[in-house]
Length: 117
Image (cartoon, rainbow, N blue to C red; front, top):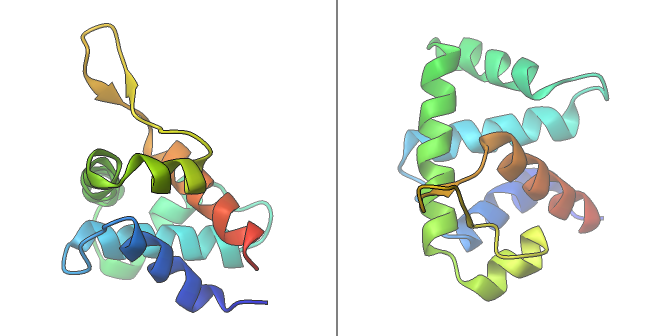
């Protein structure tokens, strides 16, 4: 069984997350809260707990996390995204722009991490 306190940052870094970006810290915290929390902990709860920990707003957490998740999805190799997410998670909306939710991103990472324990 692998230690998730090491596994979570390892997966994010492997995907290309920049450790110096605040969104990386928030994503790591959100994933850790969901992984270590009770089964009833929701994504919204994790955002709120992260915001409280860093003394910022929930919106600031979500925006920063989205920015880093978008960079990861844009820059990670198709092979790595397929390994972790099961497919290349870049989707396109009707305007041809990439879209996804941070929730999707976090839950796929969490699922991958739990499969490696």
